[in-house]
Length: 154
Image (cartoon, rainbow, N blue to C red; front, side, top):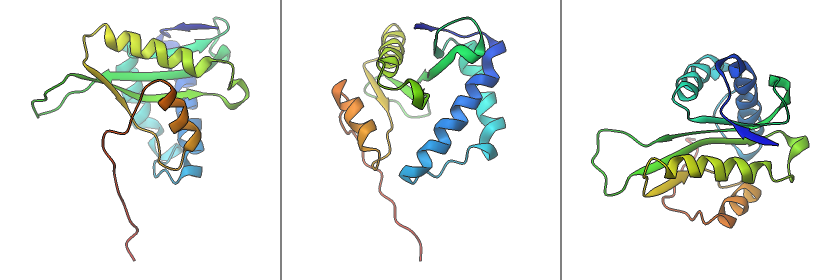
């Protein structure tokens, strides 16, 4: 399994994986819709890919050989911050290839690339109901930093 920067010709496969990720997160009460956001996500991922902020796990040269991906960026915005943060936006491994170390390899590669940009911290989000995801990230030293609370409007 190789962790590499894909080429732009593989963007549709990566967007398909993002849609699988979004759909799978619905079981944890995620609100992001996969198909309705496909076009916007494709545009974002193209920009990140061109900037070298997308990596894939693959067995061979064909897009069908991609078994997971990660996308990441340097946090930006209008506020001055005390620290520079790298953000891991997405990390996904196809279900049939989980527990093979692919997620760990993608996470470590994304962290390494962000560290090369001299960030002070790396942040990511995981849904509160996704206990397996929270345990995975805790094994790599991620701890809660901020809690988002919500309630339904009745």
